[in-house]
Each structure stands twice: as structure tokens, then as C-alpha cells.
Length: 98
Picture 1: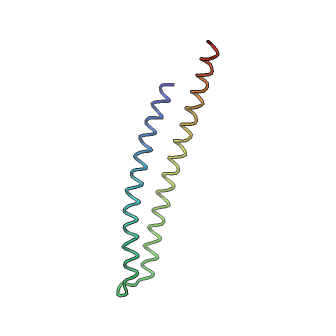
Picture 2: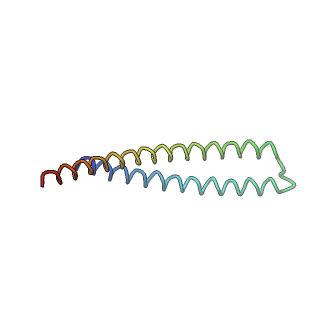
Picture 3: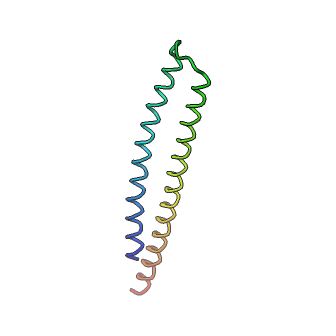
């Protein structure tokens, strides 16, 4: 059971790092989106094709980030559920022996 707890703690740390990385990447993408919109609004630099191409890249990167974060979150949730089951079984067995 201690191994499972250590595994959960490691997974929690990894989840925290992935989430923090996501937030950093998201802030960069958000900034790039703002620049892209300002550029589109500028009459001299009005380039709809460039806007569409750059926005497509930003959306694709966001989807990649979200999918990675979501995958890690699902795995972490599964690990937590397994740990809860083990804990419930251990507690139930312990209580039966009293």
C-alpha cells in the first residue's frame, strides 16, 4: 500500500508540473493571439491568409496541450480511484479483524 501512496505522490507532482507547463504555454499562446489580432486590425498589415494560418497553428498547439493535460488528468484520476479502492479494502479487512 505504501508503494501505491508513493506512486500517487509522484503522479501528483507530475500533474502539477504538467499543469504549470500548460499555463506557461497558454500564456505565450494568448500573447501571440493578441499580437495576431492587432496585426489583423492594422490596415497596413491586413493579411487574412496569414491570420488564418497563424491562428490554425495556435489552435492546433492549444488542442495538443489540452489533450496532453487531459490525458494526464485521466490517468491521475484513475490512480486516485485505485488507491481509494485499496484503502477501502484494507480498512474493511482491518475492521473485520477487530
